[in-house]
Amino acid sequence: MTETIGIWIAAFLTLCMFSFLYKDNPFYKFAEHLFVGVSMGYYIPYTYYNAFIPYAYNPLFLKKEYILIIPFIIGFLYWFRFSSKFSWVSRYPIAFGMGMVGMGVPMSMHATVLVQMRSMMLPLDNINIILIFVGTISILLYFFFSKAHEGVYGKFTSVGIWFMMVGFGASFGYTVMARISLLIGRIQFLLGDWLGLIK
Amino acid sequence: MKFSDRIQKVDRRIIYVILLIAVVLPLVFRLGFKTYTTTPVENLYRHIDAIAGKDDMAILMDFTHDPGVLPELYPMDLAILRHCFERNIKVFTISFLPQGAAIIQMALSEVKEDYPNIEANVDYCNFGFKPWSTKLPIMLGMGDDIAEAVETNSEGLKLENLPIMQNMKNYDNIQVVVEISGSSMGQFWVIYARAKFGVDVAVGLTAVMAADVYPYLQSGQFVGSLGGLKGAAEYEQLVDIFAMNGLEFSKKKARDMEWVEAQYEELPELAQLYKYNKARIGMDAQAIVHVLIIFFIILGNIGYFLDRRAQKKSM
Image (cartoon, rainbow over all chains, first blue to last red; front, side, top):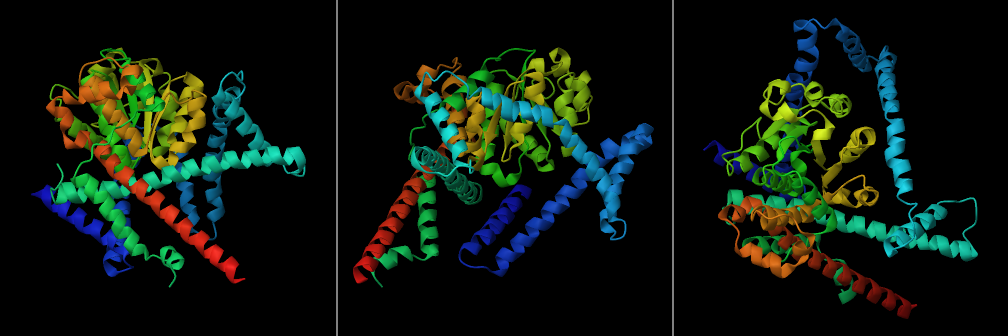
């Protein structure tokens, strides 16, 4: 019974959302606001019970791990964002966070730059490697603006544009597929779970 | 109004209705288009299948996605879990999003109802939701000791006491981390877990993100990928034709459509359940809509060129 009620509510809200395709209306507005409210309502207590209690409250107050007072205070400084006079204090935890990002720089350089460059430096013994090589070089040169794109150099950089166009086309095709997949998912729900037309 | 103007100014609501019909009809009257598998999906399947029956190896599935992308990613969740349960492969699940934890529960309970012998904390272990801010300590900590880095499962039980953890220590016991998300979370695993500890990483992504991972596939930093609904449909098929029939993976056979069709005829009832075919049925609608969109693009261009020619003539 509970499941049936849930399915009917979900179906009603889905139709409310779809009604925007005709034009903006109160049903759409209602569903939109409900979505925002429910998302936040779900997120806040879930984070409180699954993040604050096990990682801050329990270790600090029950297990007496007093070393946690330091990150606790650093985190607490974020609340000064709400004070116009003392908002500068909140920059300290932000600075701490930036330091944490710095920790990832060497590993990030390795994974996203060095390994990717290494995979470019292969013997040009098959058509795929040749295409990747030509594509990478021509696109890099296209974005090199200290030399005018003229003559043979200009023609070679225009090859880079073609490679980019193919890339944009692939991304666009995938984007269409993604959006249609979302529509298919909702229609599968309406026809299957709600109306029982597909099993 | 001229023909060229009319086809360029079609009311968008008419297009929506045509799209709706193009989606609904293939879902109700199944067309059964063939699914052709691709190398990134086959590589992930083979990689996971390689540890079938091993007690000291597992895969880690990271469900860092929310309900907004379920139509694309949920069939992947089900297909990979079904593969693991069918082939006796140990699974760990984790999510760094609160919503992802609920999706893990939903996926596990949906697949588990067809595999009553599969036991929690013995055949699989759900680490549950871990706050986003603990992502780095957990990713790095698992390189030394999984039980120490993750600490507890979703029920609050200490990992070190669970049966599944008796032969598991660190990333050496993880065959592959499968990141299923609509974001670039997979790159975090590459940067922190793969770069430092060498663990293999694969991704299941929404189609919007799928084109971005090809450089990482080419460099071998991702061992495989599932791109959107198409990737999920391919994985569903591989699970059906190999895992459900108790067969070892073979790329040659996977590409032989006659052999594939023959395997479909011998499938057990379990494989024919709607929930395990959702992506493939969805791809039927997807194919029709793609043809329709191509038709609309061609029609729009015809209108544009006719219009331009008429303008040139009038000048």
